[in-house]
Length: 256
Image 1: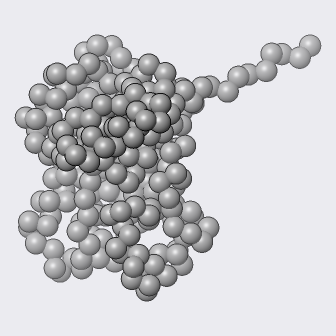
Image 2: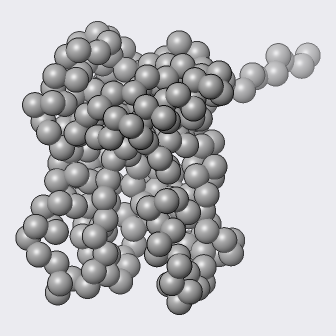
């Protein structure tokens, strides 16, 4: 006798609260839009009130539920106040980050601090504050950290960025072990070069663009849409057994 067919776990996030940092544009905005389209109640965080206000309104205009919140994630006191003043979230997208590409011999201490403080320190303490609130309220959930293929390999003039994204990979694995008993998962999405307002100036250099395309085996740059399905997989029930891993969305860059 044929057994009942299994049903695909849902990619829907109806009623779940999601927080996206660095959400005003590019990857963060795309991920916030994906979560809202799947039914999540999304809080968009950035330092620019105008930018996230426009972004949140665009999501609402598309039928989603979204609110903007001005927050500098590198300000620990502000982060603590923010989480104290909000209901716990079910999903965190730890996306805020920066990059200062240059040869390693040109890196100053100020450059080092700027990249590591935002990409590593701020990411750590935002995740900590979010997880503590989840634990205190007994809410299972998903932490998703936006890493990079540069957290898997090296790159010329990317010493700071690589250092920060490799650190994020290690943090993620340790987070997953600490949080698993509480039903909280932690994963990384590691994209290749994605065309966004921040990266477009780099691709104006024909030689740089060609060097990137030569390493992406599928022969094209990434788009923000390439990451939207990945974030839904990790955010909800469809990825319920995924934790402590890195979902590499790189067109084959790291395959050889």
